[in-house]
Image (cartoon, rainbow, N blue to C red):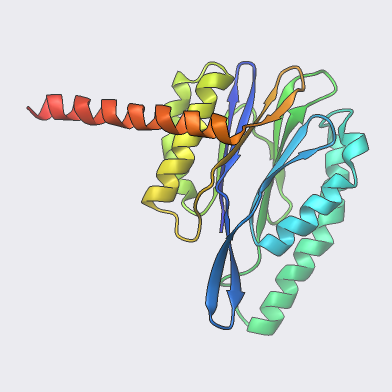
Length: 233
């Protein structure tokens, strides 16, 4: 399973995910580390939640269109992405239902692409497992995967305090960390955070930058605990 989230700021978009995946074996599920956020071409970030196999196939298709995506997230190229993904998702669904005679646990994938359009505007494009798609940058935030309801609620409550990428990074980090700790089974650290600036620059946070966010997170939680204690008293 996976938990991913994204937050639009006034100078970029911050995207993050957990770093765990589960593989089914004869002895049960085995967890291992996996990367879930990827740069596509020069200035697009891909992240997805769902079945690992479908995520892998999806990213290969989207990577094959990286040259066109470099020119911007426009409707024509995104329709091409949908067209190529549709038979893969449908075949996975049909095969699962035929083999298992049920729809519970059906393979799924939710995809988010973040980048610039041809007018150099920040865009967030989401495609669901039924290939329904939409631009969600007007909403300003996104959360998907295990514990997404909790994650969405937390992210939306915190996003008002985000004005730039720096504040967005700690908000995304906290959303992921609290979701992993509180609700999400089958996901876990390491947390992976990226951002794309309104200039098109893509950056993946280093281990040192993630550790800095961890320290800020601990300070933040301590301040909240002290505030709650002062009210109780």
